[in-house]
Length: 126
Ligand SMILES: [Zn+2]
Image (tube, rainbow, N blue to C red; front, side):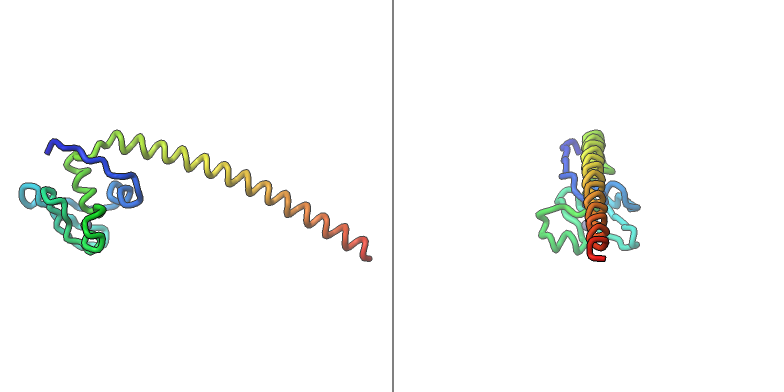
């Protein structure tokens, strides 16, 4: 298996890489994948298909996490590329978090200003 497939780094790939799954090679290019929930599905790497409902539902357009996990286990996925994509994703998320914290601080300030204004109004009304 020399061809390398780099799947999109989406949630399904993340789950494929991180969830507890047991992968057993039953025959050449034929794998049995037992998921966290204890269900077992058959992945045919040559055909690029899986027996899980997620795969059938998606009509094979997108690969399910079982198929992706098998690709990871047999080194069809460039793990280093996956890692560096994950690292840059984490950096982006940190930047987003900092921006959100910044916005939260501004909103907090606005809330305090409004409270002060309310206090002043109450004093005027007295
Ligand atoms: Zn599947």
